[in-house]
Every structure is written in C-alpha cells, then in structure tokens.
Amino acid sequence: MNLNKFRHEINSLIFNGIFAILTLLTVIIFYKNILLTTVILSVLAIIALLKWKTAKVFIIFILGGFLGAFAEIIGVNYGAWSYSYASFLGVPAWIFFFWGNAAIFIYRLSNEIKKIKMKK
Image (tube, rainbow, N blue to C red):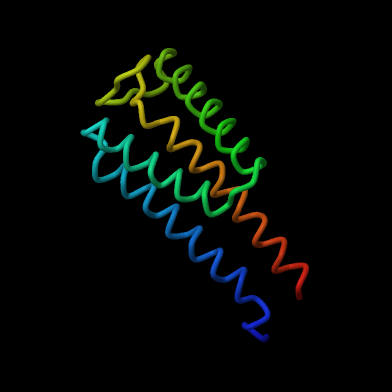
C-alpha cells in the first residue's frame, strides 16, 4: 500500500487523535477547576473549528454540545449519575464543549475513514 496516496488522510487522523486525547486529558486533569477546564476545552474547540472551517462542522459542534449537555442534565436530574464538581443544573459548565468536541471528532473520523476506503 502506498502511504503517500493517503498522506492528507493520515495527517487529518493524527490531528483528530491529538484533538480527542487533549480533550479527554483536559477533563481528567483539570475537572476540579471548572473555569480552567471550560477555557481549555473552548480553545481546543476554536482550534478544531478553524482547522475544519465548514458550516457543517460548526452545526455538528453546536448540536453535539447542546444535545450532549441536555442528555447529561436529564441523567443527573433523574439520578442516573452525578458530578462532584458541577456548576449548572447539576453538570459542569465545560460539558457543552466536551460533547461538542466529541461530536466533531466522531464526524471527522468517519469522514477520513470514508476517504481512505474510497482511495483503496
């Protein structure tokens, strides 16, 4: 298999992976500091949205953020789980950015996999 043929997709997958890892590590390391976690996740989101600057990615981020946060609020308020450091309706303020980042990660990952399959 000629890897040069997939160079763009490989670079995108690497960026996507780093983006996902940094999103997770931010929450794992800084979750006790809601403001810092929110700022870091929002900066990561801005970087990703600037790299993948399409209206579709932005809409997926917004929908993923709102729907994910909404589901978290429902789950917390019905007692399914809880957050030890919450700031808004039982969830941390950074939850919107976490779910928005997760949504665009999944979307971009699926796009890159489709591109690789099409080039084979």
